[in-house]
Image (cartoon, rainbow, N blue to C red):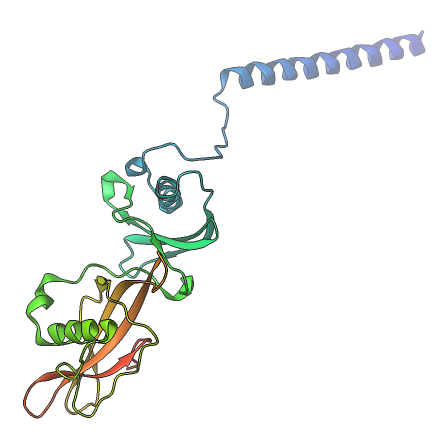
Length: 246
């Protein structure tokens, strides 16, 4: 009799445990049907870039701009980095074998926007190059700027650079001339080279030039050292493809 009671008690406990388990499963199923499911979004971004927020969405805005710039392409991300201002992001991508960069700016409530078209960067290292801003209008009347631009035009087109260069300076010869070139950006300020007499300032200019014999164009950057000669005339004293060192 005692053995029978023990078996019945164990059976009741098993049934109760099973009932509790079934009840928990039902509760979980009901809760999952009523709760909002988590969703992982992937694929092409279809949201307007001006409504995208956050650094990750800055990349999405850049991807959208690249797809509009090169319809049918599938840009492959190469590099993402903050610019010095901290309010913009430089996105580098491979678009059908070409290295292209996009500048994305933070416009606060307006989100991330792409203010300029993407720029191809053939021949330039993505990790050491980013587009410069438009030259400040204040530099247009500065003698250093005027001298640098005048020299650059004569140098690239094969003209006479003597009017713009120091009398004892011979600029490096170019293997080809570029009759069609245009300024695309510049450093906002001239870099003073310390411990130079007369004082040397470096004017950094970014320009785009059509490749001779080809329909393509490339973006280049030069650093032109300018100083005043004995007659107080601004003249180019050096041409460098790397930034000056302090």
